[in-house]
Image (cartoon, rainbow, N blue to C red; front, side, top):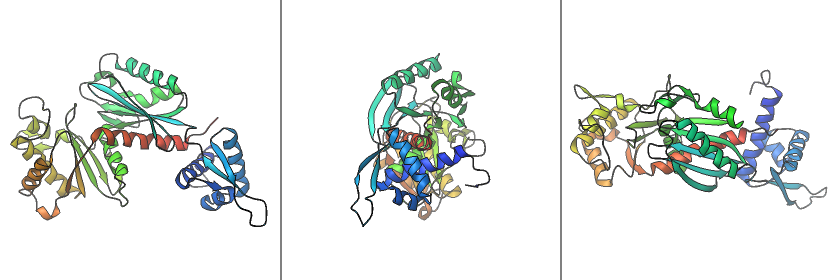
Length: 344
């Protein structure tokens, strides 16, 4: 951080995040260990820990063995001090999880879909009910089947009541806690990356049709790609054949598709898209939802893709649990907000 631009509030946020992150990672630490790890003076660390202990955010768990002087106090983080809410909106239902600062899930739940008329009122009531039962919720991550720019949904076909609506601003004003809003596929590729514990900075593409038409989450060298106008991943529009885009090719004139991918037209359309992604970003892996493919279908896609591009450059094709990845991605975004939080 540029110290010339740092404000007391921004420095406080950096210090709090450093203490929280370190204690959650290592389990426990003394003031000296935190001071050395974070490069922050001992008096400053002492001041912050005193306030955090008073607030119940950290706990004293004992004294270290003496090396001749006063025995050092050892602290651990109280993971129940703050809770996060990750909630995502689908055509048929609303799914959510509540989790603590260590990422441990405390509750899974479902509610009726809010992607209908008066959906904003229904979503607000749903979140209010959850928070009333869990008052320690201190940040919210909301996943939506649409394109999002800084918390405003600007492309969400079929759900006009949410079109051009600043969801982040609305709920931060309403609940007075930080909110992040993310596209479903961006959250899913982030969640997949975090869930399988990829250590190096891989490039990934997550493809899914789901309830709202095809979309992709794209990660390049470990970073989610949102694009210059936050429209990245809207693969429905990718041109295929003479007069069809990818969505039209998948649906083959039916207007929709459901269930496992198995038809020749579906396999060919996806293979062309795999070849296009390979030629443009050469990803390590392309992930499919296990509800939509099976091993035999992935083998067919690989063979078909090699008609369009040399097979030695093709990525690995993997299956995963989209709903789980989606929630894990939202949880990671929510945890970032929690670690940055400043208690009043």
